[in-house]
Image 1 (cartoon, rainbow over the protein chains, first blue to last red):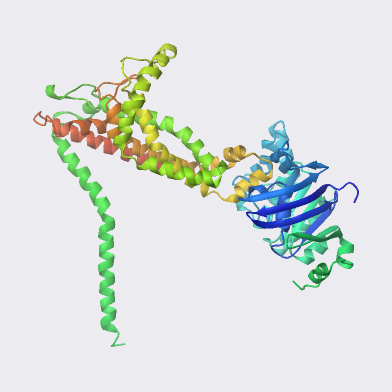
Image 2 (tube, rainbow over the protein chains, first blue to last red):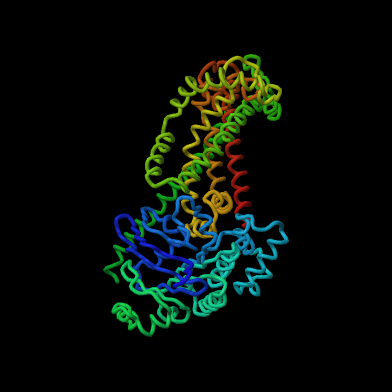
Length: 252
Length: 313
């Protein structure tokens, strides 16, 4: 792959003495949707969390190897993890709205990074990102209501708007629709497809159908290892590894 | 059915008895409060027959032998010492709690928490001794000269007496005494904050400190205030440790380097002595009534404030 956006080199990770990732080598293409799939407990969420330095928030988590974003190791001592997390946004399994108003949720990230100069600019930006996440029509008239008053599907789109507002290059999604109803899931999937030309997107999922709907590039993991990775059409239609074939056939 | 009824009645009788017993036990605290208040008030009454309540409250002269009973110096002393203690304790305690819940590794937590619990369990007389041996000399020999030289023009920091037995010494001892308490309450409040708030904020590239400042602190404020209220109530009534370091001079304090005479110290120092002085007994129990009223009023007021803070969200 030429010019990958994220490159993982010899990555090993442990929770305590329990290995979670075993010698991962991987390249993730720019401005496409990469789907990481595999049975539960295979390490796909762990791998995703190493990309925005959330992995280290777990007690006893330890890691060796490199994760390069645009050729720069995000685990280098000189790298500020808050800068990494600004550049690489995360959509969690359940929406993690902050206990503030809808408006403040979107403005918060821009505010802590001092990205806008005055109230006018914040107001315009909040509107822009709510529109981008497809939420403006529903919340434009009640921006100062608490974000927790929204439905869970709306909350997830609010999290998307909030994440986009700090102008990331990469969007990570950790099973971002698994807590949502089918309609809300569709909303999110549609948005991710719309945005994929502008952002590099990495989605973890355990539903094969979602993987097929979204993926340009597929990573299949099993027991903490990457079994197979490649363009979606290749992995889905002509899997090279026996375990990938078994997984696609629904055998585990 | 007939076979069952005797046991059933027995069970019902048992249930009735149980209910009555637990009701009486639960009502006991309320009865005690009313009883104590009434008893104190009855003994306070003779003084109120001689003097108006207002004159007692604003009177600044305390000469029991001459029949002068002004409570204002004691009320002021209580409020000053408590205010200084709470003022000194709150900021560092909040920061400590933030450290423990947001920054510290589990090992640090496991080691620090028992230390705080021991601090909370120390008898107050030990704090008093520490106050006499360490705090009073420090205030008298170190702080007082420095403050009067550089900030002496501010009345609050001026110096009128040569020792360290002062409101500030009492405040420092109180601050240390209520600290474990404030830290524990704030820490518990922070630990109940959902992990999602932290992840949501950190995920946008916020630092820990920004997360504390903009998310956790704002949301935990009512709980933290409740902790401060409990700490303040405790400080208002703290007797022994304060009594040992505060100087016990019945005067109107003008500066934090002045000696004061809080209400609990007045009662503890004098009750049971010189009781032959007319109305002295009534005056001391009057001090107890005042202390009770201050603590109750403070608790009621802070509950109301807290409810308004909570209702606003």
